[in-house]
Image (cartoon, rainbow, N blue to C red; front, top):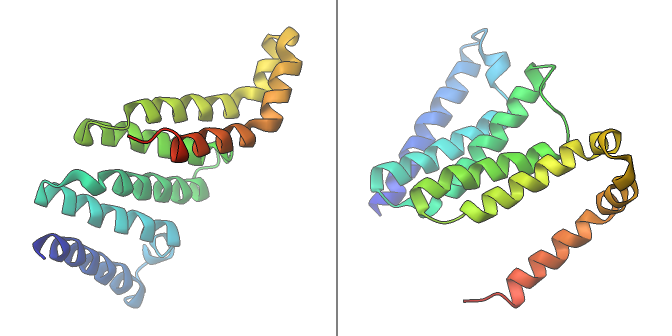
Length: 161
């Protein structure tokens, strides 16, 4: 019960600050009163629970919420921030890599997702540097969702410990 009270307490304090800033009509409220900040808030609450209780089972979820919320928040304010769909996969990859330090699992998945995100981000630019592999890159870029499906199904049904 103590673990849940940490999460719920941090969450209520965060929500209280979040809504109080809006009610007081502070200038900062118009920049902070967004749904990505709510993702970050829930992620911080989960992270605080993990840190205080020394139970790191939810650290990956915490990092995913923080990085995705941060990405969506920053993408509205910084014009140079990449808007590519692969940024979502990149944020999840960073979450796996960050959580691997505490949970001792997920390093391979983080590296794999990082490579996939980088490939997706720069696949259009690969054609400029290697015209000979242009057809292969275009073919792979077209059917990459099927690769995700096959790997996911393999991990779900055949790769059980």
